[in-house]
Image (cartoon, rainbow, N blue to C red; front, side, top):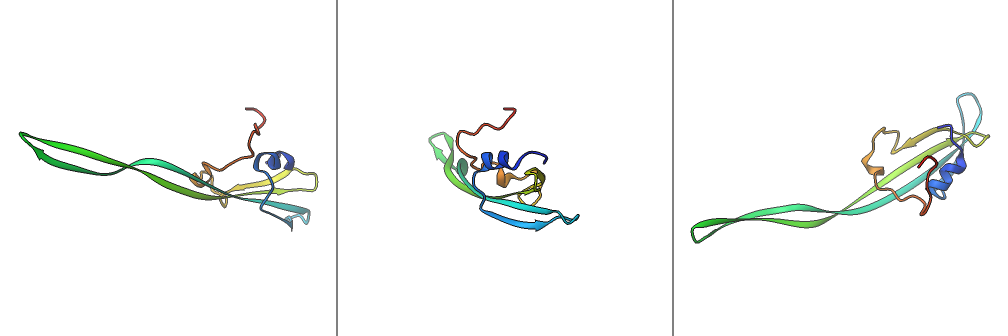
Amino acid sequence: MGRSDQEALNLFGKPSSVKKTTGINGEELVVLTWEKSSSWTNTEAAGTSMAHTGNGMVYTEYYQTVGHSSDCTIEAVVNKAGSIVDFKIDNGRIVSNKCKNIPYVPGYIPPGF
C-alpha cells in the first residue's frame, strides 16, 4: 500500500480485469485484479516394500514426481493519484501458499532488491 500503480503493473504485468468503484468517502477508485496460475513438480515418497533375501530383509523406498498447480488472485485498489490504497493477495489472506510460485514479469527487479 502507498506505492504507485505503475510499480504493480511493472511487477505483475497487464491486469486480468480493471473496474471502477467508489470508496467509503465517495472517492473514485479503480480495482486492478490479476489472476495468476503456477505449476511445479516435487519428488515425493510413493511407497515402500520389504522382501526376504537369503538371511536378511531388503527394504526399498519408491519415489515419484508429482505435479502440483495453484491459482492466485492479486488485487490492488488505486486512487486518482495512482497510489495503491488497498492491496489483497488470495482474497486477503496474510500468508498464502497459493501465491508462492506465481510468475512475475520476466526480468523485473522490484525496488530494494
